[in-house]
Image (cartoon, rainbow, N blue to C red; front, side, top):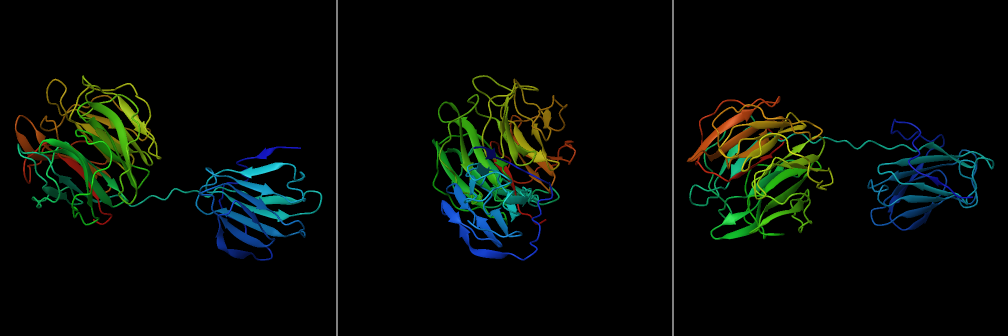
Length: 420
């Protein structure tokens, strides 16, 4: 007889019932491909590297209990297989194949008798939905005034932009930035002197920009970046001499990965922002002509194919998250400079144009701040400006705020710090 038990969820509580006789928890984390377990014991099962076959005791007494827990939340990648070792499992003999393949699962089995054998008391999935505190502060950095610069301007939790901070790292423009690790940021790529670069600069949770880190991936500029997965980031698209759609993932420690083959229309001058729960969106840009298409990014950093565009096709706009789970694209140039915005709901659906507020301009930057708000800043209107426009947690853009710091364009911005 053969069969498979998969995702056999009995109830929703996620609570493993206490043993009537008390459990002894195994001190070791199980990682080997096979393990024999004992009654009235609990085990942490780590399938990060491989599937694991769990061999149950060959003899058991009514009331014997065994608890297995997905230590690394990887059973969905590498399953566990239960070998009932001659005894029955839910009334079936051990010729059945019993598998559990859901990440975050816990399995609590109790032995009944020779007729039914081992019976799951619980085989729940424990929810894993921790939400990091939102970032409170932000910074604008780098760009060009006609000459490349590395200056930064910090933004406090009320959206007030600070004066110039002396630049660190290679002065450049056409770069991108995103939050990573929950409370830190990264600037990356761009154009410096007469060459495109892949250089990155990490930003601490105090807003301090670090010196250059050697670049990884294709050198390019006019790309975009966004946070995804809660604590990671993704750089995508841009110009290497020709338009590309390659992406580079950034770990929760700020380590940039090698190129991932591009998905969607190759283009530059686009924007990107986080939305929903750990997802991101790239949208707009120029791929030979201005477009309004978008590409969604899953919470694992996987980029989806093109979604038909909504709103005015344009390039050199900016984007940021707001409201905790939504995003906004704004400004840019599509024949002429605009101050149009397009809101993105928490499912990644881009809305039609909203009449512009503030000075029409392009080559600006945007970031979230204050937990659930956003700010657009700097750019070019015909000449460089340093004005900003705040966005409230409903996505409403406010009038111009007089600029602070060096007026410049093609800069980048990102949020940092859990502390206001």
